[in-house]
Image 1 (cartoon, rainbow, N blue to C red):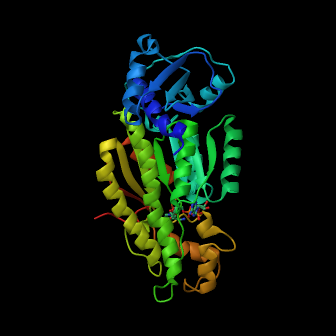
Image 2: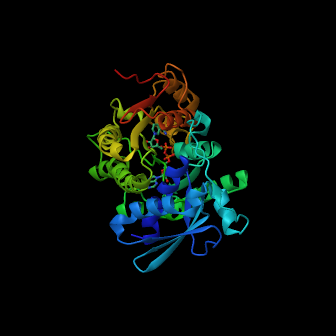
Image 3: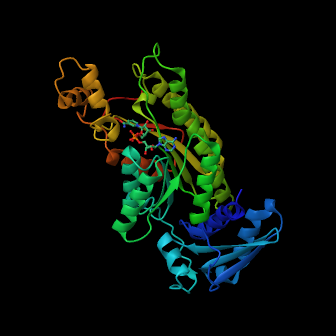
Length: 388
Ligand SMILES: NC(=O)c1ccc[n+]([C@@H]2O[C@H](COP(=O)([O-])OP(=O)(O)OC[C@H]3O[C@@H](n4cnc5c(N)ncnc54)[C@H](O)[C@@H]3O)[C@@H](O)[C@H]2O)c1
């Protein structure tokens, strides 16, 4: 593992613990010498304790301040980091526009719903398109730093560029990942550790659908759906969990969240769509199990189960969307056009409309804000699926 990425979450946790607010710890070889703290680590297993003790004993902390940069010496090598309460300020230090140490402002009251992810570091897999894009936009709008991780790098880059332009600062980073491959996911979390120091919110959203009768489905297609929707959630939870656990070692009072974007098909079966529903049901088993295990490290694990996103590409793509497919296949009796097919599906929802990105964002913010819940699957279906 990259050594600078290995130490970063311990450092970030120590800053969080002193301020009760999120920090950016950014690996940067040319970090400035102003307001710098030097820390020496002897022995990898003492990393967390050495970093916490060095900050506690430093003249910075005694003067109720925190350094702008840290030089960390371990195994005969030196690692340098910029330290700032948000990414924009980290960029200012790099440009030499900030030379004064940070005053410690220990927040006591909890943040309001709108501020619950402000300056927090968030990852969204499959963030380039569909629900993922909506969630990325929603999180950026409420002040999070978002890593847009996707197989479609051009899409992730385009969205990050657009958002950074819109906000006039870095609010989003594109990262290439295949969530079904362990090495790729590990490299993704290293990128996050090097650029932000740790992670507060992991949204495991990337998913695929290959609807088919079980009597006809090619088993390779069944396995593909299961790999992406089920196994990949475990891979993402493993590496994000390790990063969050390391951060928690120096920030015992801080909580982090892993949220799986599941589906209403994770709560009730889906006709001729077993590979999808089976993987989503399994996802809830993983959510409950990981929640029990990771609570020890301050990590909550929950699922959001959205209803159908009729306005997203899965349903509305004019060439391969489900509305076109269902119209051509005659799946909805009497339907003459796409509007007829859409009305048929909308009528299945008591609230008579599809789920939107806004509905999902509200559920995510609720789960992050709610400190007393873990292992839950929250339906966001307009009443179409009700828990018993
Ligand atoms: N669209 C719906 O109606 C609906 C309803 C309920 C739940 N969901 C769930 O929401 C999530 C997003 O669905 P969507 O409809 O927005 O999908 P989408 O197909 O529009 O977008 C999925 C994104 O994930 C990316 N992706 C796919 N495989 C990947 C991989 N192996 N590694 C990294 N990235 C990968 C794609 O490139 C794409 O950007 C899924 O988990 C899905 O099951 C969707």
